[in-house]
Length: 237
View 1: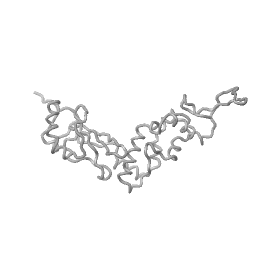
View 2: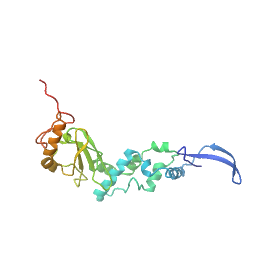
View 3: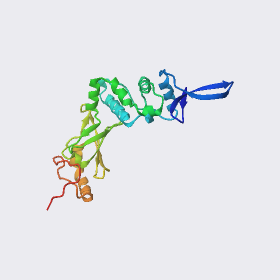
View 4: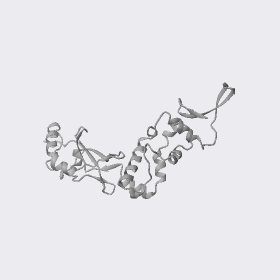
């Protein structure tokens, strides 16, 4: 029984040898015992991939959220899990009984992690390190988490009209770093302080964007203006 690099799976063969010469080789069914399959699979896969390569995006994102929240709120006593440093027992549980990369793709690590967390921990992660934030326009914007860095909220400027303060995570301890985007979704300004941006930088930004995007709304007082998710409506004659 061994890992086949070409097939990305564990295979079993029966060989007839004479000294070092293989006289006969034929495939056989894998044994019923699943105890060592995960270890064989992992050893084989790690010769071709990193642990990060094996993670689906949903699981990777959740692990980053969990790890960031552990740094911001150590008193929560969350488990120490990082994408490049997964606990061996967690990996073993994730791979248990699997025989191929294809099977691994169908079993998300996020499900194994969530099964290990308490209900209180699950609720806290969702409330204090949420996947998304609702902005004044009504859109739900995904937050980008990276361990050791500020969480990033990339959102078009017009969608946060009416929002005076920077959103905060981790019971108010961690502000997001706002990537404020033009209508073409390109970064126009990066700031951890939205209020300061409105008061000091927005007037100059407004002049530039109003010239480039005249069909869009660029109010004089963005902190009280109504947020919109698209171009402003044209008035009917």
